[in-house]
Length: 289
Image (cartoon, rainbow, N blue to C red; front, side):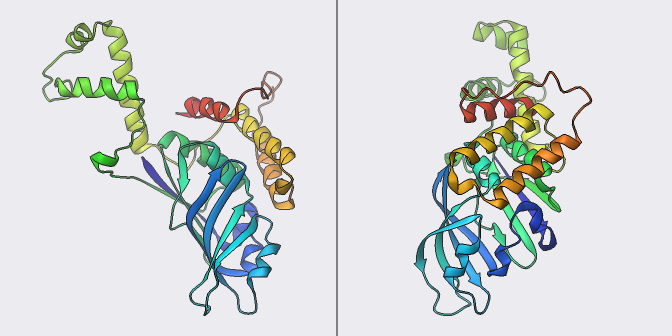
């Protein structure tokens, strides 16, 4: 489980389609999700508005739809609590990963946008790759979260976790080793090469989760094009996504992909529209892991 913080300076908010928000609000804080499915993301925000601006003025922000005013501030320093539907490609893709979440501390103020996500390293790397195509963050930092045993999360599958624990309990990772890989294989009734391959993969996943960089993750042309086609499909199917800012961000990603296209792109497969979007993303995540 990792936490990654992305930051864009205030003068680059136009690159991510959020430049108009600060015309109304001087500070916005993300507090929590109310509902989170790819085509309906509702969040509780705290809005600190500019003098002379009211909650009704928030309706002018394309990337947010005001659904409910939970509490109006009695004085400007308190901030208004408002539930909004978020209409932006990145949160929508974030919801589709089924394993990465924005957390409290994410905010937009006069310094810029701070977007903090938690999740597995592989899924965060996918989002990092998309962010680089949309508008490379000015600053990125990552850390591994230390969780208690009762709340333990892992990037390993259940089978991988059981095998790793089996090897650990029998001293395979002790120095010196208390058991050889051949003996592990015999106890499990599997071939030595099979156990060796699985343990090597497990170790690679854990090392990648701990140390992988989030600053320069690059998607292949096929991966990036598939993600854009998914975003465009969402845009075509949902009228609220047909905004200038949403369209502009998708175009920005497509332009970035075009800049990186190899000379021969004839063999890049098209998106299989019959495949579920989450399955497509899972395949891409596996490819970049």
